[in-house]
Length: 158
Image (cartoon, rainbow, N blue to C red; front, side, top):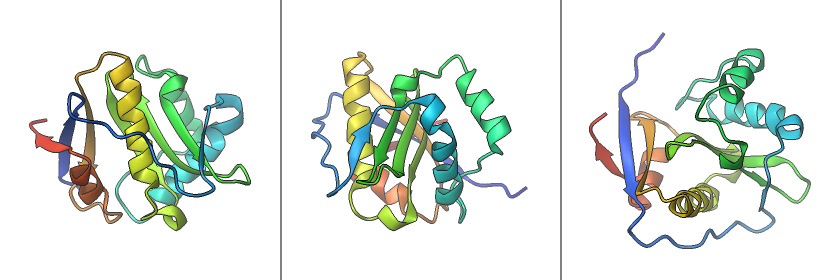
């Protein structure tokens, strides 16, 4: 297994947080585990296919997510297109940690990652969190590091 340099980043929520601006034809949909879990997993597999993360097979991934003490289905933010296909998601832990941010390759560079993260910021601000953290592979090929920095994330000690 390849070792990756992982960077922990933090975005303070006292800083201004714009409202999410969704790309044309994309909307936020409530996460329904029985209906969406397999499609969310498929998106993660697709999004991480060229690097940036690792996804276990569904039979391992779903129980480990669902049964985690920090899992809350209200903190799985799902973006779907006009046909209902899931094209983006932000899966967060209750500790104000973004576990996964995934955008379908065809939807990258359209503002979907920013919209999802702005939604995350508002959700955690509403829960009284002071900041949101995440980790990213330093060599993530999707441009994630650039996105996070553009939204005010700063590197912090792990």
